Image (tube, rainbow, N blue to C red; front, side):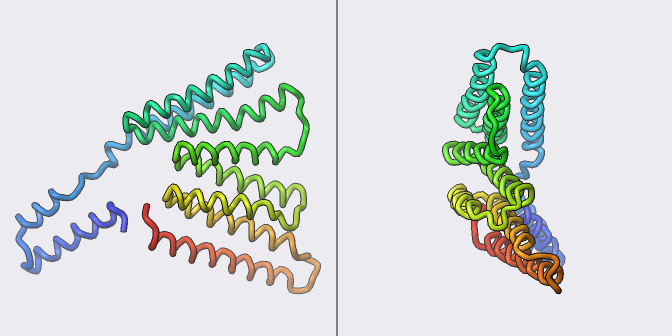
Length: 255
């Protein structure tokens, strides 16, 4: 049970116990004083700072992209590298100071610089290729950042990017069974367990459900009689498995 839910349940029980005469009001107040204080108000400035840092970062990147052709190639590369490493360096400093939210924000900004660098460098040197591969590279960079920095935000970025990658491969390029996703998914799942990230558990489950549903739809032809009902049944089955697995993780694994 989460700390917030536990405190709410305990306070409700204390009120009932006071009414039933099991404990006195003074004893209940003493118990409540022993509980950790809520940190929502303390976290609000940090959350705003995270959002502000991310918006400022992408504002700078938008400005650079708008003036991209007016900057020399060497200066472009230096600017992208400096922005990325400045973000990661700031993350190290903030981690040492115990600023968890700002630390996650800086790691996220560093991952964002890396992902946008892939696109801008490809544009600068006229590199053509299979464009979902760029999304895969961005996901790989985010996953490495998640491992090295033990960052939940980087892990979330990696899962989101890899889900987009497999979706594009299946939908845009008609890949009926995108098996490379399963390999990457196993790595992401292991990373979520290693980081003990509850949001990671949930997202990898949803990502697998998304891939499985698309694979089912691509594996059957709608011209076959009864295919629509089969697809709907299989889709619901996949979603049910995802929900059961997520519920199991929620009950048995730590935050």
